[in-house]
Structure formats: structure tokens, C-alpha cells
Amino acid sequence: MHFSGCCTLVIAITVTGSAIAQPANPVENHTACTAEKADVEKRMEVARSKGQMLLRRQLADQLGALQASCQPLAVDPGRAANIERLEKEVRVLRAELEAAEEQLRKLRSEANR
Image 1: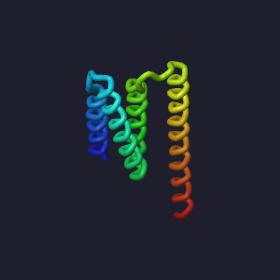
Image 2 (image 1 turned 90 degrees about the horizontal axis):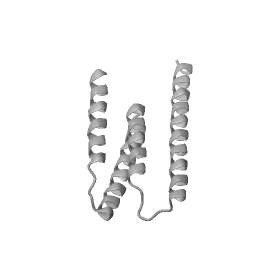
Image 3 (image 1 turned 135 degrees about the horizontal axis):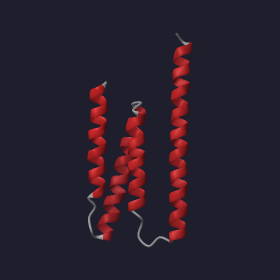
């Protein structure tokens, strides 16, 4: 069990390091950001499907940081702020939903004993 936590920490540190090292060219940076966001979203889905909620939350935090640092080219600041606010709200709601689903699974498993 402790080994799993260490692996999660190592993965989170590795992923965070790769998020920091972005290309200098804005077009390349945008492309790299888009690809990295897609990768993080895919890993979040895998973690969720395996019940690895801590890793999924860490990846959600990383995705939020990527979204904040990888702004699309020539986006209206007000619109970008609104999009960012809504994305954050969606992440919070998803986290709450996953927590509620986890509680439901526990209650159902206890009821089936």
C-alpha cells in the first residue's frame, strides 16, 4: 500500500516537471499544451476507472495548472477568465460527484455484506 503512494507521488512530480518545460515558440507551446492537456485528461480517466481518486485529483490539479499556463492564442481576457472559472467549477463538481459516488459504493458494499 505504501509502495502505491510512493509511485503516485513520483508520477505527480514527473508530470509536474514535464508541464513546466514548455517550448518557447507560442504556436509550438499551444500545440504542446493541447497535447499535454489531452494526455492528462486521458490519464485522469484511467485513474478514475481504476478507483485511484488521489491520483485523479492530482492530475486534475495539474490540468488546471496547464489550462492556466496554456492560454489559447489571442483570446479575449474576459472570455478566457470566464472559461477558466467555468472549467474550475466543473472540476470541483466532478470531484464532488466522484466523492459522492465513492460513498455510494461503500454504502452499497456494506449493505451487501
